[in-house]
Length: 258
Image (cartoon, rainbow, N blue to C red; front, side):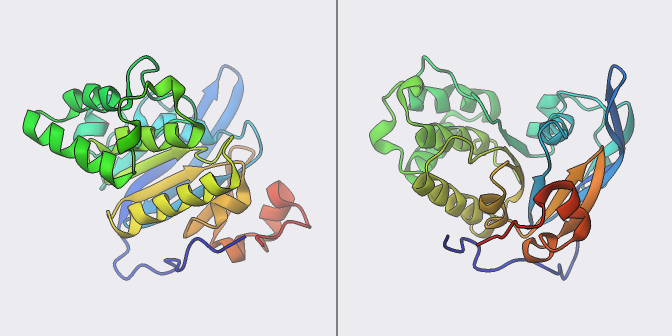
């Protein structure tokens, strides 16, 4: 597999935390999902989340965007506690964009109608709305698809649409929930390049989770392995796969990036 990430940010000259999850604990009934979970996303970083099925990767995203409230702990954005802020504030004020694993678009609307509908919620000026939509259609090469209903798009086309919808609000932080799921090899490579370009060209900091560990590790600067309600290891991809705790919790002994 070709190396997507030509560079990795290992040391941040001015290390600035954009998101910090501080001592997060959440329970579903008597089931513990996380207890005293701590990690952060730095400005300009692509961070990956890995872990076994049911470990709570999507739960982390739901906590960050406000769909779930932790039993204990805090979510900080630029050192401001947003734990009790509503979803809309997190999008508009704190510039968080979210790309869900499934859906995220209106099935019965065309691609352009989807962009128009969401733009009316997040962009007040109509002229700016139209300009932003046209820029995104051009950026993601969606021009020939703009009048096709979203339900008739391919998996990769739908993913580009949903990323475009998330970018309408000019996020500085983008959350990608299993972006590579159910995509073919070439579509995954194209999507990996899109993600890296969002970091390098648009200055967006990104958290992504996926079960396709090799594809995730080819894209990120660093990654976290989650198990048993906590972070068991965090490092650059090459170092992480050698970490004994990460091997025991997730990778096993035979896993290799290439």
